Length: 291
Image (cartoon, rainbow, N blue to C red; front, side, top):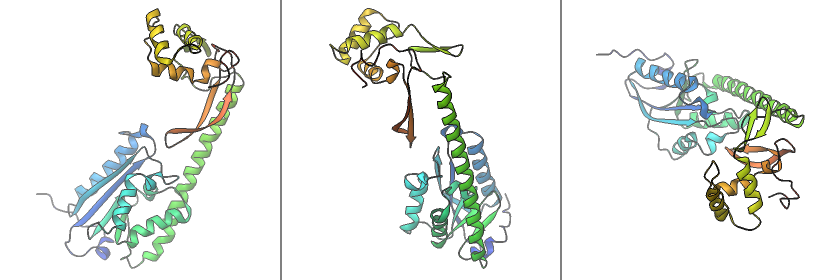
């Protein structure tokens, strides 16, 4: 039978006797590409190690925001963390509650009073927070709890500064990439299916003839009829009305590259248009202007 390790000293100020500690754990990482990568595995291993060491701590629920940024508070607006905070507000969490996280930057990277207010509101609701990376407990029941506020604020500000610097570096890199594209360079290896990138140059491939044909037919017939016509002509690829619609709404048929601003994984506005980036299949005047 496994013997429970004694809890860290700070726990005895906060939790009474042999009462079970009801744990709500939370993991988060920003990029979906990190799923089951080092970031997620590291956080899961830390959580599992805690429960192995302290069997008197019982996991009630685990909340996960995978591929969700905390820089602008997205996890607090629509993520699993938002659900946990709502449960706290509704007084639905169990007594002897503990929020278990790797560090405060998993909860928020917003910085300023917003992030601090969020952390304090959780603690004030009598839900202690334990950060695994430094093994520190934060609770309103601690005798030195006022000293923790400055430490929390410093950690949050550092996390916000790191995220802001990373965001600026990414923005600078994107701006340099666009400038390279304006000067004849390649912005990204991804390109429309009728174009190939060969030796650093964009060239039309075997699908270009069908796409060109679609631009000619669109003045007389609809998307469904265009798809049917192309399929009857025996081009290398099969077409649907949806595919035709997507093709004819791309500025790439005019040779333009469109850089978009993205938010929450969706394009929200055009950031920049680079003309003559791709080989054009049709001029804007031939196409009757832009779609």
